[in-house]
Image 1 (cartoon, one colour):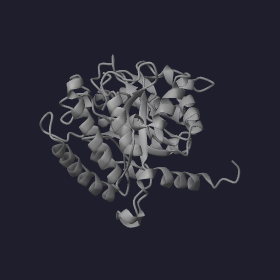
Image 2 (cartoon, rainbow, N blue to C red; image 1 turned 30 degrees about the horizontal axis):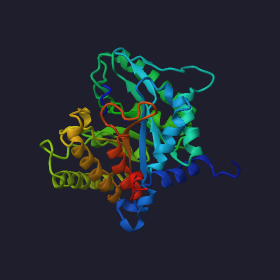
Image 3 (cartoon, helix red, strand yellow; image 1 turned 60 degrees about the vertical axis):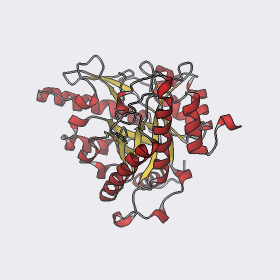
Image 4 (spheres, helix red, strand yellow; image 1 turned 90 degrees about the vertical axis):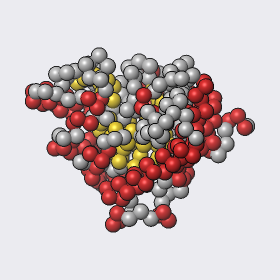
Length: 356
């Protein structure tokens, strides 16, 4: 969870979608076994970055998106992601900019065009904007009255299908993010997933909050298991690197076993650490302790990226979060901070811009 506190002669559509999904988000080997020899090389891993916003997302549709994507590519990223917003109310109302428009918003579609022109793939991950709604975060969204539930599913469906249609050329699409208290509505989720598939060939996932991904009942309808990967990897602040690494190795064992059972790979739809001594303990909080905590942030990110690259059941990551100019450093996760950029470049390219 984030605190804002993540041609011609084409084959028939079902086959086209299957081929695309196998390339982008490959499932496990037939029979549910995991065969390392059949795994794609590390260069095929998703090395993604979420391009975020300090507002409601209009900057995704401006010229500023171009240098942002270019810089991420130079750092070794091969995917980018945006998270279009809709507002949620206590009564189940879902409102979003561009609703009913004849043309899709530029902030939805321009990142797709620009990323493809620069040779990167694009993942669209819708977020319900809960601030000001009375909900404390997305995982708390629920309704007491059936009428509110009915309204929510009707209007959420309209938004997601509108977005999926507008972003049909994206390479990956997320049907929902961190909506923990909606997971009991399996019928509604499966119907929505089916309708999304009719509008886009993009590989599909759901972004589950890290404690709840094993509660998602519809992974079989999706192409990959999506997890907001804010796993605690230490019980105490400022641990040694060995503690962080053990925490990640233990977590990877759990993920690997679950991946095999579900016959689906895992993608980290968000992975990030703030500049805090407590980043290994509660990475979802986005707490800031200042530059003195930078070695902790660097160590957490370096080890997480190394383990994700190494783990065959994890098909890749999307780092949280990057901003378009002029606010690139950000308030807490600070991916554009020079030392953090160096960590990312070393993980994804084996070198850094500082060494050139």
